[in-house]
Length: 79
Image (spheres, rainbow, N blue to C red):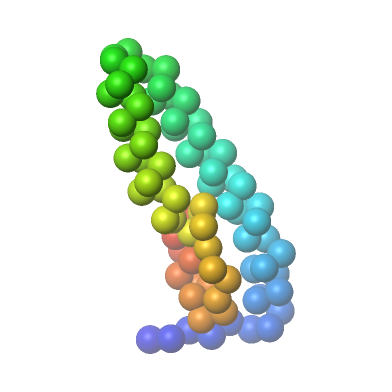
């Protein structure tokens, strides 16, 4: 089922998406700090962080193509 958003909602979405991404990435950075500060080997931390960044950068909270037809689904991914 394809959902279409209104023109005013699309405008509001475009205005806010940058702030949502910034908030999401701040949350990720805090998780990375916790990972890097935890007990264990530096090499284990390094490789785990590399794996996490590789996965996380594909999330709309980090990298997004603004598409009116995908906006509803992208908003849901920010939660």
